[in-house]
Length: 405
Ligand SMILES: *Cc1c(COP(=O)(O)O)cnc(C)c1O
Ligand SMILES: [Zn+2]
Image (tube, rainbow, N blue to C red; front, side, top):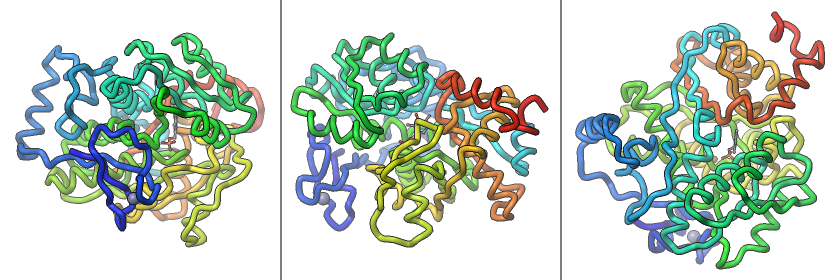
């Protein structure tokens, strides 16, 4: 296994455990190249199922259980039993969206209540492996909470850069509880990311989603989802897009599984942004070749309040390879969809509800078949942003017909 430049025209390679964050030749992002598995899909499916009866910490993790598709060489892994997240049907939500076969893959069921844990178990394991003493990230909240928790487990110092005033109290509380050093940045996430990249040095192992090891962990959500679907690919996988690491990671998983013979077809990947933070949706509509960052991203879905997503090229590649597309939804549509998911007893954070909001739009416009098999990925737990919930339900009639119906 090794690292490779994600720019296919360059494709420079580096050692797997090199600490570079970008290609030394062309500066594009790196990705992990996984060796093709030696076992057949049928054999691997059986091994992965058998591991569910094991108490080995690697098997109890919904990420490391699929380790044939992960970077290797580790003698110690940092895990808290992440993954193992349910695939749930929602009755009212499906009816509301006008879909007959809708399921939610709820990644808010993770140790720190969002999907970032899937990436951190691999990212922090790698940090330990290369001898880092401190780890750092810029974050809209969730990455920092997850980093702080896994760093604490590993005995590493965590330093997190947060946009001052734009992180929910619940997320900030997690960061403080797990003992991270907090740097409040005057500005949005993009400014926080720029600042940590300026401050970064060899003493601080960098764990934003441009780190390819994090994406390896996050991609495993698709393995678990497909196992839960009996390895029948759905027609659509719908995911919120912020810095666009997660959509890219999911695309990588689907391509790898397709290439290894696990899937007959690729699901279409749909990435959803908030209207006020929609640089990829704008690029898609305009047909432009380069991303134009949104200078002042604005949305109440703070987890995706990002104007200059670093993984946009990887995400675009996923959309092209899976015949997918990107769209955007308004904050009002997000609030309604979120309230609906709550009324199904499921709940999620605002960014996650972009998925249902988009699906309802697509179904109403006749752009998605009523009977299509659809998985919407819920990225975070309802308790990640309780102010949003209280405020949107008290601000009548914002949710008329949805809440208190
Ligand atoms: C991080 C996050 C996102 C966005 O993921 P990207 O990889 O940045 O696109 C969406 N929803 C939640 C809840 C998140 O924490
Ligand atoms: Zn390159």
